[in-house]
Amino acid sequence: MPVPAKLIDLLDTDQVPDPESVSIDTGYVDLLPQSELRDATARHQSLSQRTMEFPLLAPIYEHLWRPAGVLAFMGFNVKHFRTERDKTVRALGLQPGSTVIDVACGPGNFTSRFAEAVSPDGVAVGVDVSVPMLRRAVRTNRHPNAVYVRADGTQLPFGDGVFDAASCYAALYLIPEPFRVVDELIRLVRPGGRISIMTSRASRYPVIKAGQKRILGATGLRMFELTDFTDYFQAQGLTDISREVYGVVQYVHATKPSN
Ligand SMILES: C[S@@+](CC[C@H](N)C(=O)[O-])C[C@H]1O[C@@H](n2cnc3c(N)ncnc32)[C@H](O)[C@@H]1O
Image 1 (tube, rainbow, N blue to C red):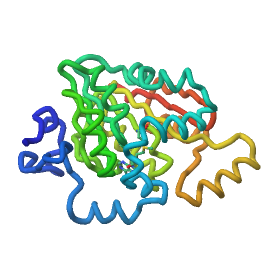
Image 2 (cartoon, rainbow, N blue to C red; image 1 turned 90 degrees about the vertical axis):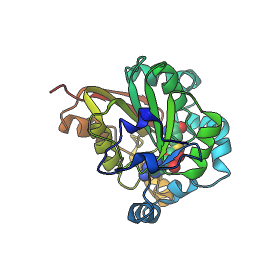
Image 3 (tube, rainbow, N blue to C red; image 1 turned 180 degrees about the vertical axis):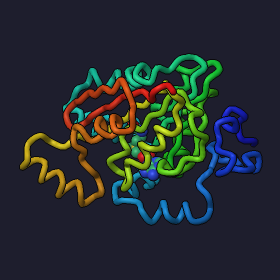
Image 4 (cartoon, rainbow, N blue to C red; image 1 turned 180 degrees about the horizontal axis):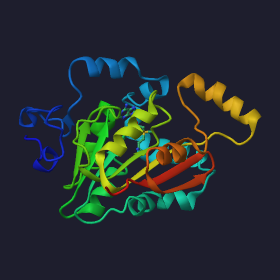
């Protein structure tokens, strides 16, 4: 099966000089190079990140693990949880024809919703490092306008400014170098394009914050300050920065300025 033409247009030809030769018999496009990057990615994984590679997690992630875990983190705000995907489509400004990248897509639970929003002629690219998650995405969140890719969020094989929008949900707190992923989101969107992230927020209370740091920190989960991403986006020159907070979860949305 050939790599979809929709994807080829978005790739960085320096990183992927011969995309037609890549096999997608698995249903996803594996662009994590066989060599050093694959080894380095595996070596630097935190315990929480390695959990995402566990084959038994992928089948239960979307309908059990995420509702139980993330909903609790959101302070059991069921109304928000139910509307989260639609809100994200709006935050990213997705329209028919848009190109969007969903970094750390897991089993494609957001990618498939993005694909609906950009249909009939746009493309939603879901990227993850985990083979079990991508296998699940291909099985349960397949969509004619969705393409799943195996790649590392800290070094994405796409050209500068090729996407109208980029997201990274429920993953920055697992990744040892989260701001490298954020830099990639900024690089990948065109001027005027939208970025949306969802991540953790440390407690306001010092005693709880210290406990979070000790217990969650041991597993590789990181709790971010409320201003970590808003300040970073501001420093990178992004505009229209907004934040929503639910429990210990924060969403930050921003626009890359037009040249
Ligand atoms: C908790 S899931 C999030 C899935 C989905 N975005 C959501 O909001 O439900 C986190 C995902 O991040 C992926 N991940 C972790 N490190 C990554 C990296 N360096 N590059 C790409 N994906 C990564 C994991 O494999 C896992 O599928």
